[in-house]
Image 1 (cartoon, helix red, strand yellow):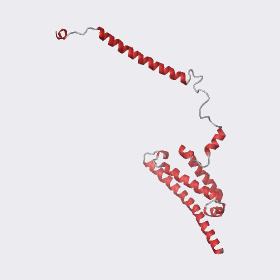
Image 2: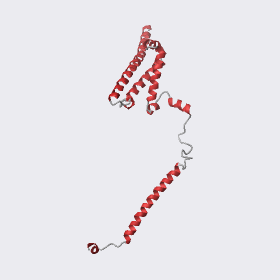
Image 3: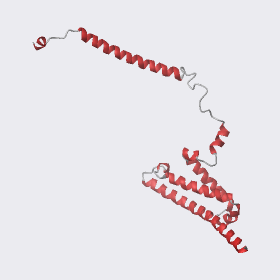
Image 4: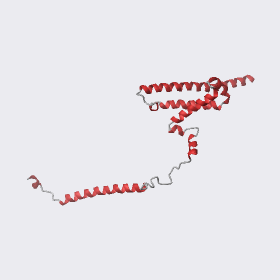
Length: 189
């Protein structure tokens, strides 16, 4: 029975160490990928890395680094292994993980931010105050006309222009009706 507990504990630690090893590999892979893509951007005419067609892949790797890093932070029993595996120990690990997360957040699309598990949007709302979905006032107030007045004026102008065209057509039709149509003999002479 004691051997089973030791075996289970060893197996559990080995599984959790996989996350630490994966984190180190992902960090190295990220650095190599960014270097490679930066070189490709230069060869493609010095385009910005954000304009590279597969830029989203870099963000995906950053997101995975962040997720694995969060797992490692949540499991304090791995801290002694982090101290041995990562230069600078747990402090350097936390600092680097924060940098990766900041980089991910700064470059995330609105869809990625919407799915943010850290609830960054809620933090911003609390800091800035709630913004109303529908303004309780007319944003054009004080600028002359309100939005409704402006739309009514534009529609009235459009209707007047259409009426004016109709009047011109009617005048041409009346003028044509008042003229005598020459007979066939008159036109042949």
